[in-house]
Image (cartoon, rainbow, N blue to C red; front, side, top):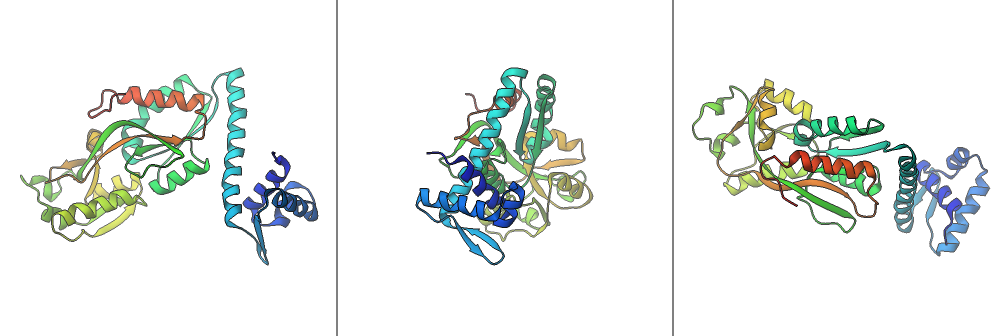
Length: 303
């Protein structure tokens, strides 16, 4: 049996972390919202909140319910948007997270085409740590993630493979290593490195490469964003890794690939979305455009 009003009250408390603040936001009395939560706890047979002097905290059962109720609310908003789509054409918002090569190389032409066909859809594209992006996907804050599929399977996540990506070493044009005929792991270890902030996979892959060659990991000089990485590489002798498919675009910015021994990272990449969510028309169209745009790329995975 659904308890819509009580669940809405509970969701508001989880967002404000305070019964009194939730009551003010909802425009009801504090005893009324406390009574509503008590009824919900009695009907479910579990305690959801623990009251403290400075607010409330969620019990383990409360955390489970909070995550599910938040998803329910997001699905309800998606349902409203989909009903508008049926009457007025595709509209609303599409929230995408993407890795560096996707933002610099793969997505710009896709988003240009998508916007031309669906001008009423507002697209949000963000970057950041992959673990955090997956958490946001599961919580409903993102609709899809474009990037590596090199992470453990999850019962609530669908991975759609589109192509394989191989990382190589990059540096500025004129870097001392660019003049060498043969660049060894020892050569690479003698320079400071730059990594994408909060991107645990790439940092660990760099360490694994040097460990395989019997070397200590190089010094990580800076963690930064995609744009910051380009800026720092152009002005320093730092090294980094990047997808081979994006080297043409980087060369226009004064950054080149450095041929070196071995492979840093070779992985399947594609689009990740929640299994529990009915795919919105905008996301279906976006996914189809991404696959079509990448069909001519090297190492594309044929469906």
